[in-house]
Image (cartoon, rainbow, N blue to C red; front, top):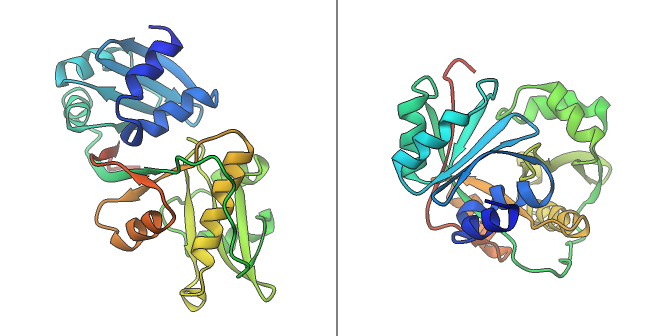
Length: 237
């Protein structure tokens, strides 16, 4: 399959597969395997992305996996079950919804905070308030790529947001005392605009069960997938 055919396959479910679509469009993906019923990619951050129509198709795709990859995102239950069958050590599973902005126009950013590139000297602040990723090196890389941003309220660093190395938007955190001021919405709109300016489709993920985040994405006009993706890695990570 050529790139056009791969994208046509993935675009059958654009909301669920937007991360794979964007990884290819942005040149951030290495294609490990393609077939009419499955696609396996590897991002530059050493993360695999799998979409397969059946468990059997997923198992076949995973014969071409990169054993050095730190994790895999399975894009439906069949893909998840294929990973479990082939890579039983990848037993930590986090289900998420995907959300993307289908518009092309820049969004108004509420004037509730000042938004600037995040500074490396403030990485300890980020580590203190964001516990999903525990790697200062990762954040330094995001800063070097101009993909991490800070929100300031009256000169006080109070929030942050950025692009992950797979291209998704995330890392959104607003300190408790600065919530309910519209800062989260402002940062999201800003990041969407950054993506659009770079020729990208803005997208991100929501942990299943995080209804406040889901409602925020809906209020911003994002399309949310009906199905779920599954972040999978070894429990020891």
